View 1 (cartoon, rainbow over the protein chains, first blue to last red):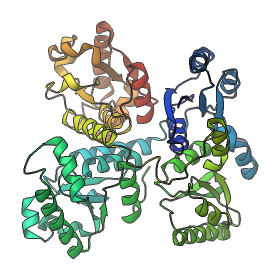
View 2 (view 1 turned 30 degrees about the vertical axis):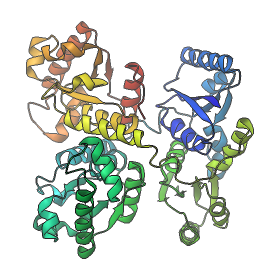
View 3 (view 1 turned 180 degrees about the horizontal axis):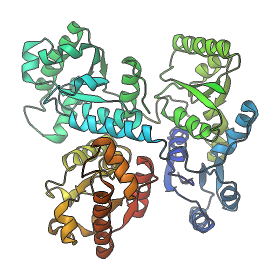
View 4 (view 1 turned 90 degrees about the vertical axis):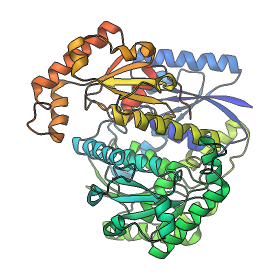
Length: 271
Length: 271
């Protein structure tokens, strides 16, 4: 069974997509055909959006689901003419919030993912710049400014985690890849000693690492189950001995790794 | 006026934060003190969460706002004992969705930002790897595999946009920085000619570019209003003459740039 789904927003559509996605993942029996309609901020654009929804209603033979985060009251009234079933996120919560807070909502579009202030913008850019500059462990020069140093063997998700932390939390995360020398020695690399309190390890099950590495370099020594297990055992022993917090990411998305790391390393978001 | 706000989730908390943030930005008169409580997936953790909420209730002298995306029915019942005002996201929409879809919601936590399938994971990693490898315009070797090539002068948000597109949409975006040679020549760099249809320009107002560059290199020629305007005028002339779509990012967040670019370049998300 397939249903058409539309995300309609007068902003980026990110809120509508996030909320709709969360609701729809609870109905895995059904296949959803989703379309995002962001920046619907004029009558002309809404007319076009309504036409698209109505065409889907006609070809499906049943009404599409329409998840909306429209802030502008006029746009919301215009959307109501469509032949879809509207789930209006702001309408569902705003009246009670107004009551509880004792003030009126401001109904200004584009605020939730808008530019924000200059400080937030700069924090985020600096954090991302930091992550890119410190993605290979070549130097620890910038580590005094790091919020966290993420350690692990190749392909344990360190790079995406660091980039995600920068973009979404404004956190300055350095990626420190562990390599042969580290496995053999079994103690913390000397250059990391001064930053002991910032260290955080990522690890993964051997079978899964083998699978990920095989996608990149099939049939290589690097991707073999033996090599993966050898590296992982050495690193896990070292992290344990040194008392460095560690997360097994086998079943995790980048979002989950980042959220877990924020919590376990007790980091505060900067944006 | 300050109010305490808690985001309570049995997953990453990303949905709860997104929902709460969108709602609260409509009440800018009030200062919100927000706390995220992710991964509340046991009775023990919920007892701890309820205690935190109740302590805030006591010290504030008024009930905190609690935005919840709890999927597990037991956790939701346990949360109800707290002294906060609960805004339950799933409860607000799930019953009507069940009715419309004619099936029962599955109530499995951690699905919306969970790992997803192997293909999605690989697409995202590949896209991020692509963005990092192609962040400086040094080579166009990978451009046949690019979804989009983002052009612009230094500090117009190309890097964060490319990283965001990779992480959030699985899009392979290359960053092509325009420099002195390009300003003087006024035509498309020869190496980009074969990728004409993938090109997308970012530009910004001169005053804003001056402000951003000044943060990085105060009082430099690079940051001067004259230099900023000179570069921007040359690039805008070139983009216009070559018919390359272009976005002025002066008032935009990274989210907005990415969402606008997806729409204007007619890109389809890969994840």
